[in-house]
Amino acid sequence: MKRLLFFSKLFVATMMCIPFTAVAQVTIGLEDVPEKAALLDIKTHAPNLNNATTEEGGLLLPRVELTDSYSLAPFISSATADEKRRHAGLIVYNLTHNPAASLRAGIYQWDGEAWERMVTELPPVTSDIAYLQTNLTTRLFPGSDSPSADDTGDLMDFGTITIPVDGSYAFEFQLEGTIPGAAYARGIYYIKLFVNNTKTDSAEMNIYVRANGASYTYSVTLATAATAGDVITFKIIAYDTARPVWTLRAANTSMVWWKL
Image (tube, rainbow, N blue to C red; front, side, top):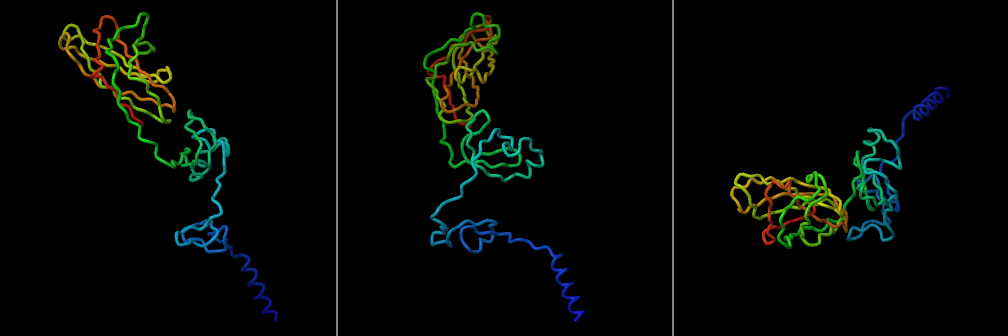
């Protein structure tokens, strides 16, 4: 009897030392076995002929006001690199609209370093071509000490260009016109891009004059980030009065722009 009692106590003690693991897969909404590859299966009935498993509702993600694309705040104000890495796969619905921080309303997932918006639809392809409305002769603006850096220049009229959706855009110019001047002179010009009258990009163009009054073609591309509704304009200016002017011809000067 004592021997049996001893083995009974030994069995109980051994069982208490064995770790038990909870069920790794869970079904919510129905007492049913989850699908094989699912840790969590949410459904209110077994799949019907169309594989639907509920007509009662969906998953409501936690709604949060994110503060920065590279921060886990407001969850963790100063996350370490290891904490950021271990939170990869975190999904929330962001309510913040802040284009400067690349945040807008929608579903975001944390990739271990930054929040990435989950795109629900591809934006429309935005591509268009515009032609210079009238001939334009470059000149140096009086009082312009730094034509490459300041905002001066003649407005290049390509019509009204309004950004349709938030994003980054490229503008490729095909400029054509005549340049009077001595052979082998160098014409230097600057083309500038403005978003709502604020310069965001510019480029220098160098053209070697082969003959007085010859026609020259030059291709250049500018780019900028912009928000839906922004108005885009362009200006062009010569480097100094000692350089030959460039008369752009409207019929042959074009600009193609598209969303990157």
